Image (cartoon, rainbow, N blue to C red; front, side):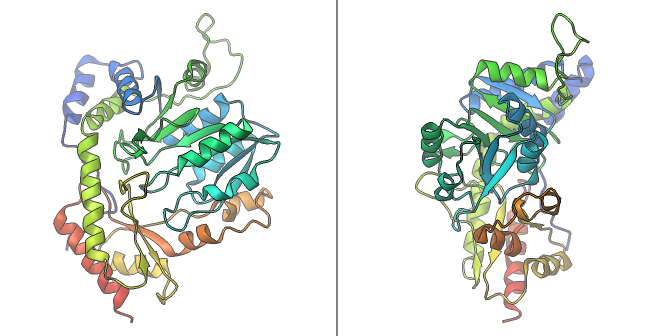
Amino acid sequence: MNPIPVNQPLLNGNEKKYLIECIDTGWISSEGLFVKQLEQEFAARVGRKYGITVSNGSVALDAAIAALNIGPGDEVILPTFTIISCAAAIVRAGATPVVVDSDPITWNMDVCDIEAKITPRTKSIMVVHIYGLPVDMDSVLNLADKYGLYIIEDAAEMHGQTYKNRPCGSFGDISTFSFYPNKHITTGEGGIIVTDNPELAERCLSLRNLCFQPQKRFVHEELGWNMRMSNLQAAVGVAQLERLDEFVARKRWMGQLYTELLADIPNIQLPILKTDYAENIYWVYGIVLKDEVPFDKQIAMKKLANHKIGTRPFFWCMHEQPVFKKMGLFAGISCPVAENLARRGFYIPSGLALTEEQIITVAKTVNQILTETY
């Protein structure tokens, strides 16, 4: 059997055509027209006034933190169950990350856990939509309004998703997306910041370009980054954005097919189809082993690897990251739901190029490895 990778993007639209246009015209740097086109069209798609492309989704968070002047003495509340980029951006700015546990059904941050973590030092809530379903935003918006907090919305995995029919990425004072190859839209590496605030947009534009000054280009009042996206990357992104609705529909078909094929396997938790505010877009298709399964996720993943099926572990909790423990962060913190997800969860092949035959093969193999020991 040929290997089934955990992710493979679809690049069979206008990607090659637009890349050739970049090469033929010589516009391959960040000054090319595809950069501006991607910024404008993506921002419009998520209902925003401004889009600022960057080199990846992680630096988008760095820029968002810096644009909001979050720094020493400030606290930012975020889910412990997320990628390290979220907490790292806070720590690098000199601020303090404060984590909340996960909802056991959606795997997103438990919004009921947020208010108890708010202190006079809290400056922002960083919302991170996880794996295919958005955070229940109404509660977060109410808290932000009540306490005068910024919302940073990490919508890295949410291209095309909505919350109560409003686009994800439209809720934060500043919101970020990733264009890594496993996302619904990819530019290889890349990301984008979106906002409705002209001052924040201007600040992010400056921060991504070394804080050059218009009249005194090489005289710098502050430090920024070179986090620019190239025209080549943006050309791929424009082609991908043209097919976003198709990609979302395909992901939902894939997720629902997996659920049909895996529904009868005992002692595993599968992603839910929908909540009362959103239908799952299955950025990845996750599986959580219940306690009755007599082995952990590492053994399950190894068994699937023996059948040439790619997998990835779920995120490891921020409060259990060795790098943060060395810094003295998160002492005495316990988040049992997130800890269980991290220890018992993994995802199976979920890329857009996955075929029906491959999905059936993966499901059969998952069934085999999870029932053969019972």
